[in-house]
Length: 114
Length: 111
Image (cartoon, rainbow over all chains, first blue to last red; front, side, top):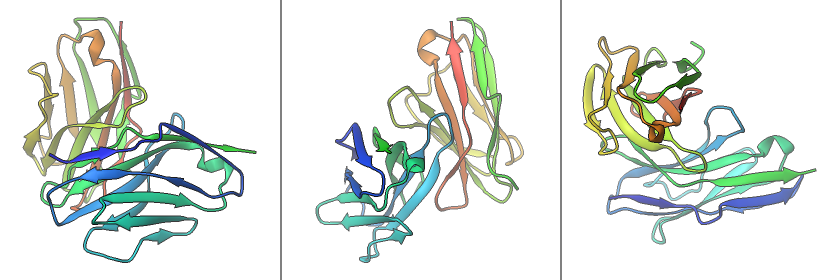
């Protein structure tokens, strides 16, 4: 069975600084997808970034980028130039390419400080 | 299309009552998922549909829980004889064989 681990329950960062959220996973699958989702307080989950396991190049979306280390089963999220609006819970998710269902980590609560 | 919608957004009920939640997915999405999220935790998979077929149910989904997607469009999740442990956020998501798009959730409180 797949598992996803986020070892940082809470983090804080100063506005305009850079922060990295960690995620590790375990799977015997070779074909899968990884995602980072953002869940602002009392608001719905929003996709931040996705990574296909077969792609070696790390995904980037504006200020968000990932460090995908397939052999180490690590998938960290880097947020550059942090903004107050980045304050949220961040969830790492593994998607099985067969069923397309998600396995989520327990989340990291990120607070961006003014 | 404005995305995945869920109704109601909040539900307060007494223990032992039945409740039903509705999810309307993005119209062209063939897959629909239900998750449960408790405070401070990540969402946990409950069940999913491909079109109208329910393809998988988690062991978390006891006999008191039932889900339907009768015409492959909207879905309902019913909880019978609610218990205090059922208090959680129930999330619906839809996809077309790719990333999932989530609704705002239904927050259930069982007194």
